[in-house]
Length: 166
Image (tube, rainbow, N blue to C red):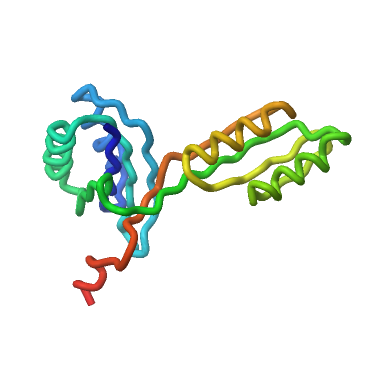
């Protein structure tokens, strides 16, 4: 089973290496890892998708807590959450295909963020399955390059931790 861990860490050099190293030393594969700033200066958020049963995730969580810079760990797998990934793809855009590509972008509600003579760069956010469907839809035109982020996830509802701090 895939688990989604939201991990708050101090924003210091080497933290990402220590967290990723913890997984590799134990032979656990990280399916996706996304790191970014939070609303608090000096604190970063990691969203880690890892496969394993509850026992393995409990073991990983205990090991993560031993890393000094780790502030908080939440397994949101069983919570109601909103999750998104980002996709950017460079698609061949010949003169005869440009209108069809733009119509496809409208259907999927995605943006063209760069236009060149022979290609478009398209940006989309959504679930893993939506982004895979977008890739499949543009494949017949010729995809030159694909970049995808990992999952980011937020639990639905009020931020209970923030409310407690007020």
